[in-house]
Amino acid sequence: MPQELLLQVSPEIAANESLLYEYVAKTVRVSTKLVQKVVVLKRSIDARQKAIKINLKVSVYLIDEEFIPQKIALPDYPNVSNQQEVIVVGAGPAGLFAALQLIELGLKPIVIERGKDVRGRRRDLKAINRDHIVNEDSNYCFGEGGAGTYSDGKLYTRSKKRGDVDRILRLLVAFGASDDILVEAHPHIGTNKLPQIIQDIRGKIIECGGQVLFDTRVTDFIIKNNEVQGVVIQNGDVISANKVILATGHSARDIFELLDRKKIFIEAKPFALGVRAEHPQELIDRIQYSCDFRGEFLPPSPYSIVKQVNGRGMYSFCMCPGGVIAPCATSPGEVVTNGWSPSKRDQATANSGIVVELKLEDFKPFAKFGALAGMEFQKAIEQKAWHLAGQTQKVPAQRMIDFTQNKVSADIPKTSYVPGTTSVEMGQVFPGFLSQIMREGFKEFGKTMKGYLTNEAILHAPESRTSSPVRIPRDNETLEHLQIKGLYPCGEGAGYAGGIISAAIDGEKCALKIAEVLQ
Image 1 (cartoon, one colour):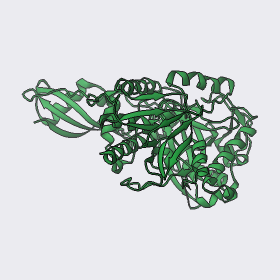
Image 2: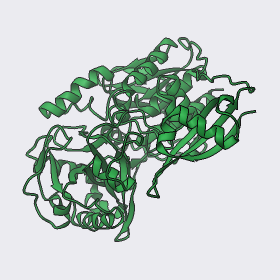
Image 3: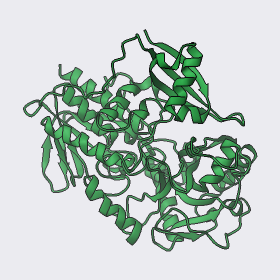
Image 4: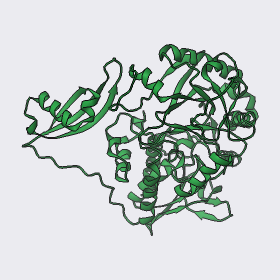
């Protein structure tokens, strides 16, 4: 039997196989020649002390123990061409993993995606970056793979109780992701690698008899006797099915408005909103690793920080080491930011959303919109940012210390945000209470992370799409009781997930329930 060990080693040993084997041999008191294989099961960085260590959980196979390499393979998906059809609205992680699960259970998914495939999306991303043109159906949020495809692919989740996280990770590996995601404490695929994985998932869905329809936007639901019968798409055609998974993501405002018009109960949901802060990656490395130079054996450092300010949580969100800031508007006339990193995280800057938790009472000025009050609050800030930035996709920006001092920055250096920046006092973008919390919060951040509060850091506004501003109520645990029979609200857009992994798990959960009901 292999022996499992918990080790704490230097970054150099963790990065060098021969050094690691020597270290393991000394630990188990055998000759290095007797160590056949060391399999790393988990890896994390401990940077709490000046001497940074790597925590490893490993399995050690000695020379007389059988070692069989484990190849991660896809499930034996059947052909479902002639099986019962289930409509899946949205081809983000919730929709795609719902479709794969449906196939595994012998059902035929019809995936309906308003945006383009991953290749077609690239042209629209280029248009928003270069020409400031927003295609409301194809952008960083909408299109094959959803928001995650071109905005990072971080796989960390705290949603362990929601489902089998390892199953989702193993499926991603089987579709081409590095098996490092099974090992790292904070796994990440990277925006440069995700598109091919997403295309391969689509290919498998089609190969097994499912359908994937791009450039197809749902404009209505067919409902009779409180049971869904299908959907209407933008050209007026009807696609019929009495089971529909609604996985449209946190930015599908037209779907929220449609549900509201059809008197399907939705409710405003608190979310978080703020700015995206960009620092030089070297500066973050110095703070986090307590060293002048990171060296070749440590990755670009992330950070995570949380403070309570005036009774509100203010925290880092979607932190991207060695990454860039992207324009993520989904309609003309608004500015929205997000961040992403390539797989190597080798860009010169680090960025993170720095956001403040909102409360339902904050949406009172938009109370006339009912359940859509939070969405309208969000929209108003994004539209204000667009006007302040000259009605372009340039982003309102300010140096961090200048923001804390209510002072317009005399200049803004070039940042990773390609459309460009406009120097603005951020207090003009946000309601007064929100600006004040952020000003105080950044001062508190600076006390915890010495060097974080600096005018080298540039704030970009707003970071507003942290999660859905609406929840579509359902019986979350059992999915037994739905408002409309056969209509399954799913993923981030329904308010039941927050990221790639939890959305994928929720997609599988809805597919499993549908199969159970049909049986």
